Image 1: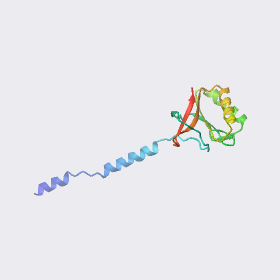
Image 2: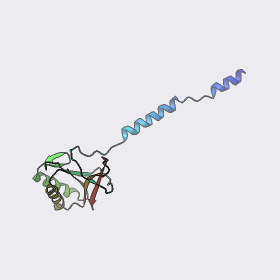
Image 3: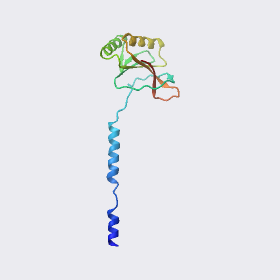
Image 4: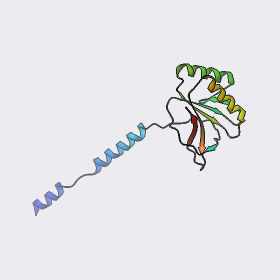
Length: 145
């Protein structure tokens, strides 16, 4: 009887180290995961039912807000500065992806002017950011290659 009780005690498995390892792995993956963040310029994107594009780490986001102000990534710029920054970007890499965000309330002509600036430097990968028609906040895009 004494030996049976001793064997039963020896065969138990302590789950605490296993739970600790699982939590450490979860914390490691949560901290090491990177998220793609779109620069925080408030633009009310139009809706479209086109397919999603993949966002790349090396990309340029050009925005036009409802008042017609231009933004290069997060920086507000005037027309001359936009042209200069696009010229510098085109000299380093014409294959960089350019995302164009135009507010639904902005002047359509202003968006066309920005597209003209982009085409002036012969960028090959331009996408226009939109929202899904279902009202979801995830960005999709209509683009050209």
